Length: 516
Ligand code: KIV
Ligand code: ZN
Image (tube, rainbow, N blue to C red; front, top):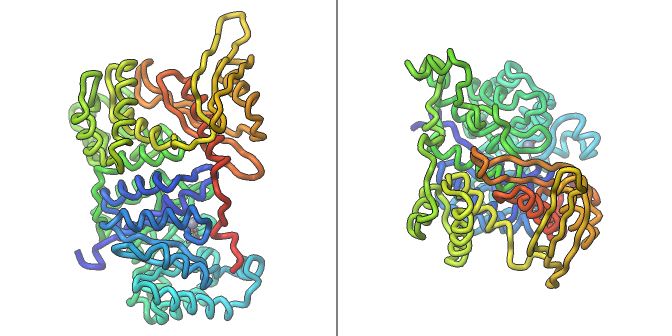
């Protein structure tokens, strides 16, 4: 494929996706997602913002070590200290990129940066030159480009290309643009900037008006050859452009798009489930491509048409994005080898034999309760193993709830609190409420419950319930997850997981509220 025919897919689930309130991920979770993205043949993985916290630095470093098939990128404000930290985190990457940015819109320059336009150009150039000291692969973003003046954008971009930036990313940071306007902006920049041919033009669209994918595609039709996106459209506020939608639009409408991605689209569902399982952000049923209803036909007319000829109502094949027709995979009698093999097919590998054993014994426990184990169950088991760490402050030892018509529900539980076994009990308005109150009776966490949601992982009343609990304390928000065939137990696990996260999470800086 020539450069003009190739559309580079830059995934920022681990960076911009993680900026979604409550979507924080551990280092190991990030490595798992990065490996799944690599298997899907994503070209560039933005693994994080290394200066934000020691945890972010270690995550970028771990992804850089683990991934060899995709370029690994680290974000840095246009500051020496940020760039040095990114360069350090990416040292061991087989292919590394530094992505540096500074705001260029009048409102950001005046109100946030308090800098003159000339100073912004100077700082952008300095940052790109410094990043080139670490790698030849440097990306520059004029933040809030969607509200910047075109003449000024042209000057900044020309200067940073001269300084050595090989990718120019145009962010619609606040999701303000409309598709025809954004496409026009990309075309104008490419036509007017004298050295535009020395760089790949990229776009990064936010979804505040629900236009992130539309704006990205319009940009591609006007010359952009990299799209920045996230799995399931995760991201700051209303999210980023959804990778699966961008990729499938380009693939399905090859009559319109003059370029192709190199992605293995059959990995899309695996990545989607992995990200929603790890972050606790459920995918809405009618979400394009990855929603449970995306290929379901309810009306008789549609069903009849699809049975006669699939193309009557379907523009894509479900298998092409990884929905498999036969999803029953394992059962009670399946052995370790079958278990390991199916997980390998799903792209899941264990870093230690202990993790495999731990997950296998969870699988056996589940198979005793539930006869048919689906891919979704397996993915949830792996996520569960990753959720619990040997040194968790809080663990659930046992839980008993009483729920009877006409009686007040009651929960009795035993927790492991900081190395000590402790009992507690509480009434509540329902068994879940009673369980949460019993946990709080012991630990008095000072958190506020912001969200409680239950989803069935598969269909059927023996399905596992996957629970997400979002807690807030002192402005910090975390999501906790838990899964079990008993949804009260799943709820207690999710609550405990959130408490552990709120206790363990390190303070991190936000890239766009910085001190440039
Ligand atoms: O939305 C944005 O502007 C960003 C930049 C850091 C590229 O995320
Ligand atoms: Zn962004």
